[in-house]
Length: 150
Image (tube, rainbow, N blue to C red; front, side, top):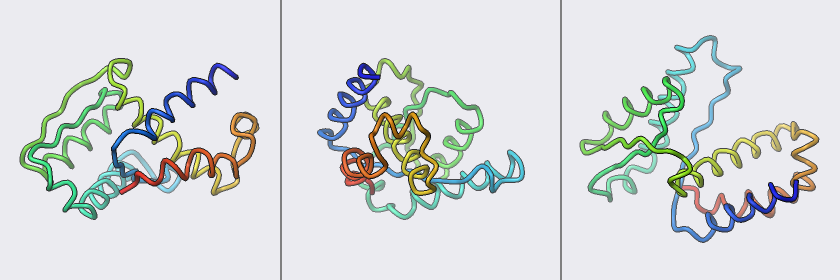
């Protein structure tokens, strides 16, 4: 447990010092009747988040998407959404161990998922043990990270 905490804190402190912004569209799998419904809902959620911050995204000449192609459906969704919204998009396949920013993205997704769990009072016993309490999680991890949210 101590080794895991040390690794998390090292990555978290690295992320805290980085100049980055993120969006994190959220959908609930339980609200989707099948894969097609989930694909549509996730596509809309990503598109809505991207267009909400259109000025920010348009300030870049080129959009580069780094993805490990881990989930086939998500690969298709990202390709469709980004190629519809932007004219100059490049996709690069990555290995998570080679890109610290990719690891930061995983950290952000994990923290946002834990935020949802905290909101729904469904923190597991091991999560409570790891972060001490939901309050400590929110104060020490979630709040500093969410300052980087667009």
